[in-house]
Image (cartoon, rainbow, N blue to C red):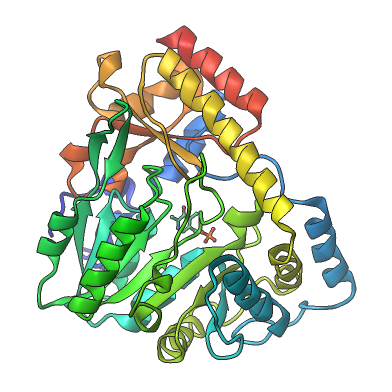
Length: 412
Ligand SMILES: *Cc1c(COP(=O)(O)O)cnc(C)c1O
């Protein structure tokens, strides 16, 4: 799929280098700077409430912060930790997968600690793809997917999640399984699946996942699953890892993130679980990206993964309450709201406000309302399909969300 130039590349650094050939190579030319940098700068210069980037404005559990301080003071992790991650954290990841999902992984051969999920995604794609391979990703997709597929020299093939009205009239974005099946060719190597899904908030159902698993087995595809929002599913929905389906454990690379699960996004601790051959491939790429990272934080995250279910339930309930505040407020302000079943994000349709272009809308929003949001079009190859959608993050304090809603209701 060839795509139109991404707006992020408008301000590609280095094109004014004076030489005929721009410094940024052709594989990455379309990925200049991310929209988040532009929008966060706008937030600062206009004093706006930043609901653009998805990071919590309150830190995770105090005892986990203290565990990091303790590790640092005790001299644990201040020097290069072991390449695959400290044994305590690998054991904690394995225990978490078993306790929650009944998935058994060997902490030594099937678990890898990474510099956030971001590095896990990069290492997986760089390790598993040959130039020319096709990768199917659900569109809209998380922005690093396209860049990493490009760095691997592979081709992204988007399958679009489309607005769909449920029996109760509520809209959500759904995967068309026939479209997914039709997108598989003889060159398809890998399915890159994200559930709960950023930016739409869609949580794939067990039936949808079973169909994806069946397709992967039938066509002998590898699957990379980005499960960073595994703990953020609402209204009793369940997150089901693809690795739990028949024939999937041997072909699935699953990715998790302490940033998202424990509200420490600055620590950059992520992990991969996969069968030994896949894990060892991903580890080969990872060792030459960061080699290791986040030493003392790894000790703290090992403790976080062992927190009792009460932590996860409270985290989920807190985020669901925040979702409700923002979703209701956006609806009152006149947006059409896609009430998310998971993640930090609510996607809206701006057409009821008489708007059609999410880019123009988001560039004007800070001046107009003192709020920053992100145009979903940046997550699409099919720009025109994503044009009317705008994403707001709700991982913020309730008072912040209430103030944002007040501003939006005044502006519209
Ligand atoms: C935030 C996010 C990531 C990156 O997670 P880190 O652990 O911060 O690197 C990956 N995938 C999705 C879908 C995300 O939203």
